[in-house]
Length: 330
Image (tube, rainbow, N blue to C red; front, side, top):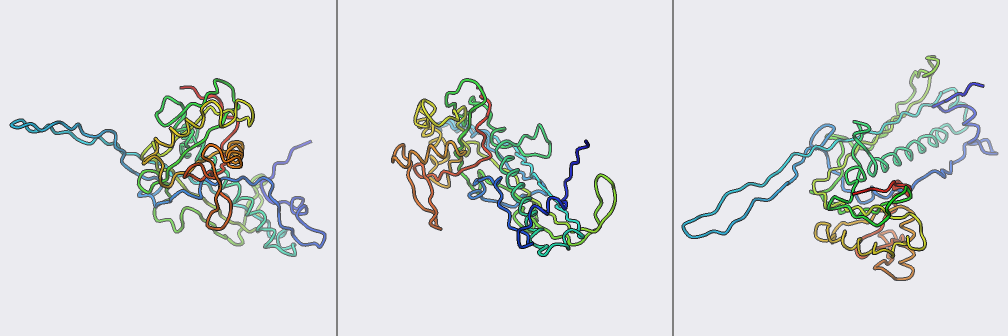
């Protein structure tokens, strides 16, 4: 039997969304991920069309003692240019007008599909920020895990697991309008997020090449990382993903490593610093907050929603961070 792969909304798929009253139902998307990494990130307009050019300081000048009749030696601040790519995710959901116009509520049917595409783009964006790899795909940004893969780097810290592929990472991030921020394309009308209703178009089936009338939307997310100071990102890796026994967050001096990483952030992480982790690590932080241990406590945000804090840093969940990372060596 032939397998049919269809990337367009079909009658059989649409029928699944019709309720007992004949109306299109709201979808309950159980595949939604909680990726809070974009809640805090400041965005700036890039200074190039699809990239952003900055300057990193490599070394400070050597300073000598001024002696009488001897003067002082000259030196220079060593710098290098740093160009960051802007990645673009785009989707074009299309709907056969014959199918859409047959619905009692065509706008709801269209909305259900578009909301699914928006969630898929958001998940892909979070995944790129963590695991994007420009070597694998030249149109993709390098994510945090790719930039900081080994604990030989000063801002990467080993948490003890010596082998296997059941590990995870915790990231401490200090957002800063000069050192560490996100960018969107130059002269973009919005902050890199676009939705355009293309209206009714003549569409072409990708398999049969037959043409038909349909409605099309364009969804696009354009974004890039701009990290001019690597100390703004501290990665704790090789953390056992298990939530009990010797793998707990409070074992094997993990909290001492967390303290050390915090103090390596600019100004010791006193401003705009966030802890990003997945659900397993967040659960352990929450358990510590319940027991009032390890400097973890609870508060509420401006809307009254509960927030778990470690010292002065809110702890955000990023489901894009895997619990199946492979052991990273030095």
